Length: 406
Image (cartoon, rainbow, N blue to C red; front, side, top):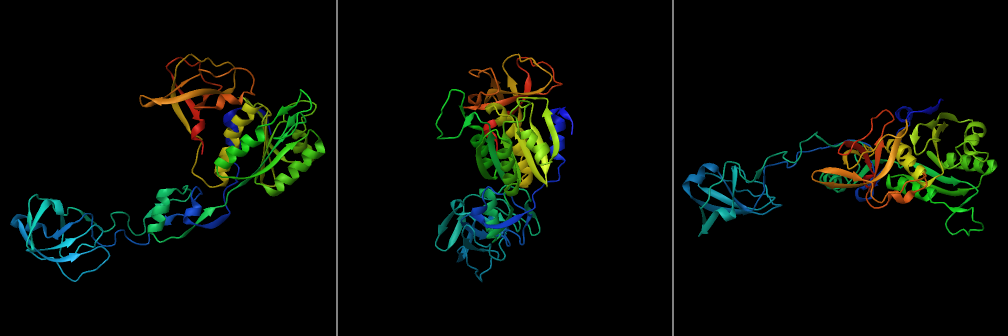
């Protein structure tokens, strides 16, 4: 373990962990929406299995087009199999979704003909094979249709249903235990008894992020700055969860007990403690019995940014999802010098216009890492790497789209 590593190195350490999705469960299709598929879905048949009509019309042999008049000998409703066949000089009225009759190679739409007595008279030609769906047009037997790691949505449900698959195996959702530490903070509904007390939002903000990412959450609330209470918190959380996330108590103050519990009481393997990022410099990540501990700073903006950067990717990994943080390029509207040799995440406003993202800082407040309101409305995080150059107005920069988090 090394103190104050850079941001890229901290990500490399977490990405190298062998933690991955393993547990699976079987769910009915519509109960699996939003869950992560744990196996490839392979077609067991062609779709369609036979040439099929794509429109209402008349099944013909294309060479009869030149005759302009073709006798109708039968009707072919969808869902039926008829005995009649198409030969030269005759046609069969055929409907959308019907099997193409034997002998037919083309469907001429009803709007391209006039019907007189028992014959069609062609008023507009069509090319060979028109409106005829070929075998396997939708998918072919043994084709991988949906890959493992896909998040199941409406299209996946539709394809699975077409394959007559009623239940699918998905990865079990990881469980994240969440708590805030600090004797100065109050939970929802607690009465303030002195001016030094503040209302905690961290544990609920992080729970919201984790739930949106697809994790089960175990809300453990507020724990006072007492080493025995914090130890009990960690032992309980690690017993029940895959990831334990705390806020507060990771700095160097007299009452910052979280790091002491992790290092001395739990004897956990500290992966890193301190990263050259702003906000979140004192973040601590550790591992105990293959469970991950992520101890975040106490300020609201700082803990939220670090939860996005570190907790969400680990949830993605544990749930087997092919998801990444939504980082894109954007055009900046002002000069923005690099103020320190750290990777800096700065709240900004983002909009999409003229085929590109654009950012500005109108209405964003400056100050400490406690200003969570900077993440309201249409927020993004401007990313400045510690080895980057000063940004000039009009430059393309990297941003993280907060409203696009999954």
